[in-house]
Length: 228
Image (cartoon, rainbow, N blue to C red; front, side, top):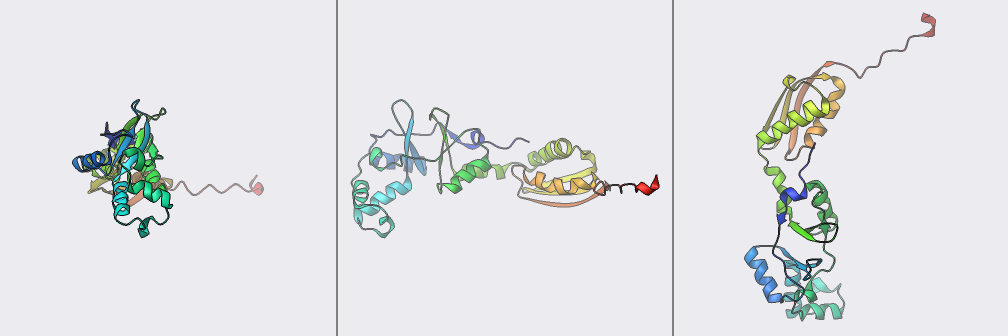
């Protein structure tokens, strides 16, 4: 079963800046592009950092209130450096969270949650920027058409994974909720079908009312030696 990958939802070729780009120009780009962050690249195209809206807001706060409570975890030198920053180099995060284009949307979401960020840079093995991905991009999997989800359930789960006859199961999808009725060939399939359907990109919930033709969970009783 193929899951949506980062390359399917990312913003390719995003607007970037260099370390020398002024803070004013960075702010202008973020506003005009309606972006939450902008990657910082060297002249050779290598990722060296990222500047986010939060970074600019922190600079504004420290300019007005160098002893701001939200920045007390920073040293005096760090607070002063941010407050007086004039270029992207002086304000950027030099360790941006990154992800590979081939990672699944679920893997990207875990990275975003683990690192507590709202933007991931998509890079290749040479740190070349391929794109950016935001929480909004990751949510696109929930916008898959119901008929597309239904077709994948029938093709990948029923016929492919379970190897059962799809004609025996009525699969309907409405607003991402999959409803399954009918009869499976074997009882052991009951425990497998719902987790497999939930794993289909775009499925929000699964409701199932299924029977089975053969109870394959009851093992034959071994013959007693006295029967021979």
